[in-house]
Image (cartoon, rainbow, N blue to C red):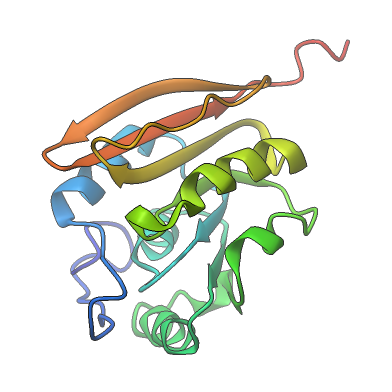
Length: 185
């Protein structure tokens, strides 16, 4: 597992031991960042269910202004902090230990949200519902959700819309966009 490009390009990230964490494969991560390539610079990012932190770290390496990492496991939080230090990106990051869903009520707003919870947990559908309820995305925000290819995700209410789904073997990326404030004139 390595950082693909940007200021931390080529750095190998530490991984969590055991089967509790499933890091995003390099192929899927490369595709994810191809989708986002022109939308990262200067943006606020949320890496929910962060695991090793590799998605948020990749965004920071590519010029994101800030990333908040949330994971419930203390060993994951320590590892994220180590990986941020290794990549010299800790100054633009906040790492929080705790359950991901309650964090969505914090009132913070983000431009990009990464969602990659354990596939069979049911947390992805609930996170999407809560993101819409608490409207955590800024206008024109992007949500990228990683799931098993056969997972059916809920539709999100306006101003959120399904943009596109991408399949990579047994993995699916679902991209949602938040509309702007077109009606607020």
